[in-house]
Length: 133
Image 1 (cartoon, rainbow, N blue to C red):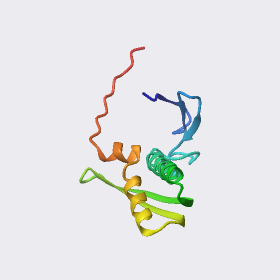
Image 2: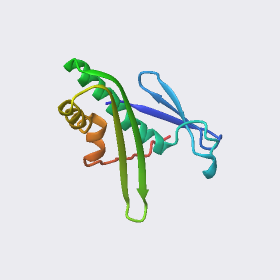
Image 3: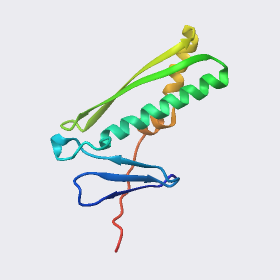
Image 4: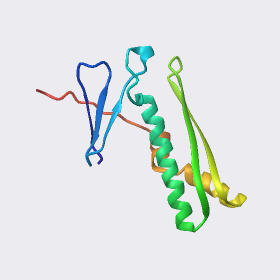
């Protein structure tokens, strides 16, 4: 299981996030809610996960098939409806290269099978424990 740690000190809402493999990134809130906009917001990180996973999955599949895919461009946006407790994720994929319609259709199916897509469209349970000092 991948382990991610985060640390938030006194500087409003700047959060340092580390992966177990040593990668580091900064998350922050927009200025409109008291942050300094020093990094991706948590919601942007969630959308980024889907975009990155979809892109990599499509690249791997096209490479394995030997298809002429030059570039994958994605736009991901989230619409949160707090009143209905519902979130809609919109993903727009642009495939650049010499692909026929059947290949493009297959790439759409592959995009919908990327690991993060499967996680987000499945049942999610979040278990939280408060660590004792």
